[in-house]
Length: 240
Image (tube, rainbow, N blue to C red; front, side, top):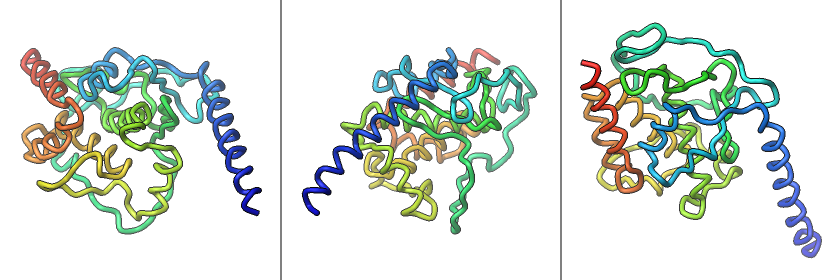
């Protein structure tokens, strides 16, 4: 039995690798690269630790042509689409106490971001840095964190099964706490994504909230987030 198990494991790994390569190949024709706005955000959040040229974006499971561009509500200053002021508490994270399963707004496999059709946009950061569409902008920030984890897996320890398993292990895998001892790389993969998502939300839509500085202090030792904040400040000053 021990010999059989040792023989099965390499086969299982090869099958998983083949499936991953097959999915990547099938979706290549139905994906797009990051837009200039998305690239600017990614570079200002992750610096040179994220290969933005390798990132692909698709809708559904990536086997159909991308949907036609559509406009949505834009939160912030001047920008395309209907612009409105961010409501109070927009970025406040609430802890879930019960398990709920539904098809995710987006997920990542390797370098590819898969958006559900409801949340896919031709540009997740249209209007940046003066404005941005909500919630797709913060969802993209979350998913780019998973791409970053994948590309830097020698440092982050990221694996697709481990990340997916967090949903089974925890009632709310996205919930995190902050404090003087909080360390970004010691958090779960979904917690890391949630933290970057919340940081992006506060920076874009509620920049005067003290929570922004609290999250930036935790992210700063790992990610060059000050570049993102500087880009936003410059954009807001230019828009006055």
